[in-house]
Amino acid sequence: MTMTWPRGEERPVRRVLSQDLIVDTALSLLSEEGLDAVSMRRVAQALGTGAASLYAHVSNKDELRELMLDRLLGRVPLPEPEPDRWQEQIREIARKQLEVLTAYPGIARVAMETTGPTGPNALLLAEGVIAVLLGGGLSRIEAALSYELLSQWVAAFAMEAGATHTIEIRDEIERKGAQIRHYMRSRKASFPNLLGLDSLLESTSLIERYEFGLNVFLTGLPEHHQEPKGADAGSPPVTRTSPRSGGPATDSATTHCGDNGEGGQV
Image (tube, one colour):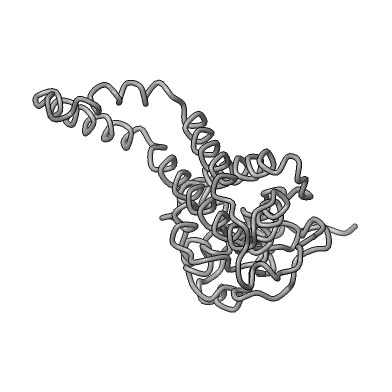
């Protein structure tokens, strides 16, 4: 008869570190506790390892933040350009982008602090938006400037929306708002237009404000459309298939890994 001896407590199996695993863990921390909670040390603790072991895969906290942003931007679907409905396609992309940036507290701040696209998903997003704009008849320089303006506005809107996600912050905003209203009411002659606007703004939802901005942006683009000049005039027409259909490039200015092996930023 073979006796089975009780075993001591088994050690948990340590997962093999990779950039994907590190980013996954960082996104979990971001979702649960916000951007300020994400550090190399906290991520290492969550993975049951030391912070030094992370540096073989991620250079520092700044790169980790860019990697998180890049991963999330990979979740923004990019359509095939349809010239007849290019404005609606831009709306769809911008709505999804706002959804992604507001779902993770603080990530919009990273988008605002990051200069230009730095990873594969960011580059693919820029490529996809510009392709839709070109399909709508904009020149190459107009499409580039429009993409830059749109991406900055979406990130700024998401950052402002995220700044009011706690009760404490909302209470502080209301307190300051009450002080400002009291000040203006005591000087009515100086503020005939501002008085009463706060109640009107409060009656509009976040989405209504966002849609208003999108409409102003999109309806204004055709009015600013000009015939291309100089080098732009001689540029060949740009066509593309969905940039993510064939998978992203493996190299970028900052090496990132995102959803389905991609990476990117606005």
